[in-house]
Length: 356
Image (cartoon, rainbow, N blue to C red):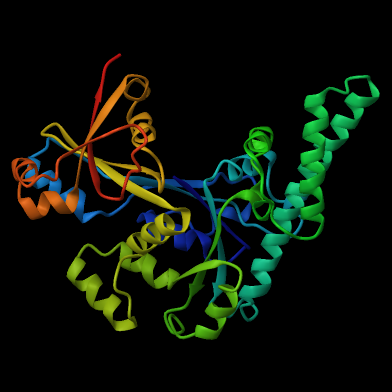
């Protein structure tokens, strides 16, 4: 899973990135638009994987991961290339989700925070970016028509793009449209920014963290929102003493680390779950979409497992813990053989039988 952090200059976006990833990226690194994005991989905290690793005495433990990408500061005219290079915008469009970081703290050198207006600015720029891409493609199709290349495929594509163009012109996201499977195939290559899941990270000061319910409610009318005390939580992430960090967190009502809160939030918002493979060699968490089948889970592990799929040996993490061992799972009748259409549940432990 890849999550891109977008924010206006001085929104504390890189501070949030550091808090989530325990990185030490320079928070003033984006004085120039030539700066490269900050990228880090964070593990998805999962007590189940830790416990299973001890139970199986595995040589290797692999948690699910999220790639966090901290982009150059967003601003008006970003869509026209004033701040973002084409390469950066292409990278934005390759994200699985976009997080809009908005400032909710005061600073002597800045005006009072305007989080709602900041969200609208970034939202408008992303819509405009998709509009420009759509219009450019429509113009190329029209040029092909003039040259006598009026194929059924191009006509079909133009109809879909006109439909999208109308939506964008009304300041709505591509995600608000419904597409059939054939239409999805045509537009998949465009990677529309406004077709991606969006959520807001409200970057608050230590003093107002958790105290602005009215603002949170207003933002949540349109976007899923999570709040961090960015600067405070960045400092916490660099503390070596976990007990000391927990005491500081309790002082302002933070129950979990920024990383754990964000990863759980992202999984729930994007509809992801984890299934698990176990053994003495490795215990590993695998990320799939809620609703995926056993065949799709096998494909996630390796294409050969999907190609030669026979059955999935399956039981749940909770059943294993309750029974104490795989033998106990079998003895109590919880061990199952499932076909390729079985819908995977969060916490399922799988072993794929296959023959290639």
